[in-house]
Amino acid sequence: MKLGRVQSKHDSRTLHLADYVTIASLPTPPPMEMLETTTTWPMLANNQFNCCTSAAAGHMVHHWTAANQQGVFLTDADIIRAHAHLTRNRLMDCVSMLSALKYWRKTGIGKHRVHSFVKAQEQKADELRGIIHLFGSAYVGLDLPKFALAGVPTGWPAIPWSIPATVSPDDAAPQLDNGHCVTAVGYGDDGVYVVTWGALKTMSWDFFNRYNVELYAVLSTDWVCGNKVSPSGFDMTSLGRDLSLVQASPSPATNCLNGSQTS
Image 1 (spheres, rainbow, N blue to C red):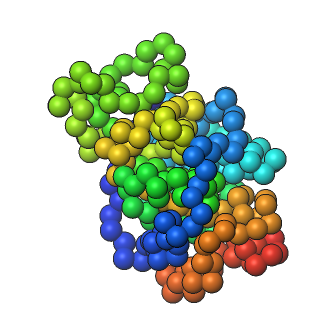
Image 2: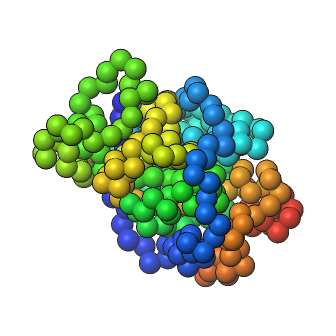
Image 3: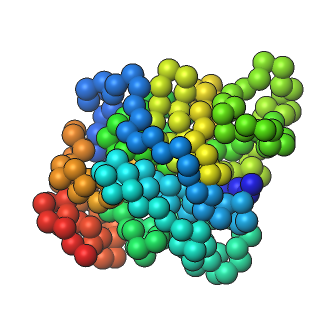
């Protein structure tokens, strides 16, 4: 299994979720949510290359489309093509989540482009639950500890990512060199349900609160247009206005949010 996420550089043009929706002001998300229950997920080349930022995007596409009864699986070739573009064909190089998101919006991954993305407050369980409830999934960045990568035991997907009581402080410390990106597709009392390395895995809330370092909400027509509605409580008018100020050209998905699908 490979990793592939480097720390994102600050970009003043990045939009923030709090500017468009206050999670606390919305109806409380259900205590548990899992909209689509695929049990077999593709690795999407993250066992060959450090392409987790693109692989996580591919898993989000599948989750959105499956929830809308389409069920599109991107391929290893789709992910490798995107990662090769982002790294200038240095496939073992790592990529920031922000760079991958910009590429996903402007160019597309596996012919799927997103409308927009907004940064949320990391290590905030209520924001993560709100993002999954409103946007269908979340784009999650982690600095994994040593113990999370210490071997792959039999039945690994069924073993939750949690912090053992007996782990040493050194093995439990977040590691900048262990940057990873995963897709959060649900949540419950026991934690966050994430897709990584071809498996659906539970991440405990304690694990999320300690190792989550980046969190994004991603708005896609695979999610919104499939249901013919916009996420409730999201200020689409203000978002469109601000996007026009920071984008060189409007996203082709914009008209979809006003009721008409574009190619």
